[in-house]
Image (cartoon, rainbow, N blue to C red):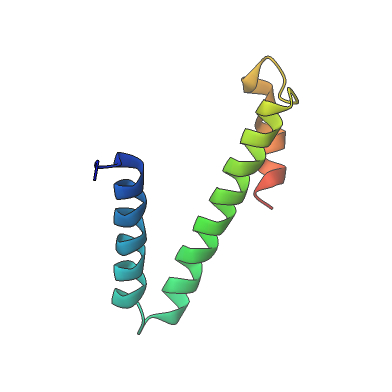
Length: 73
């Protein structure tokens, strides 16, 4: 069976996430903040990826800070 590096990276990130949640299980406020920051970052990344695939992003990315700020609200 060949070693798939993508599957290995996904398994390692999942295991690290589980260990992180398990380590912070007694600190619910910190865990909630960390997971909400992670979720908003993932949403911004997916939105940016979809916008780039559809050609929605402006050519000058310096002026696109408003889009990034609005995506993180």
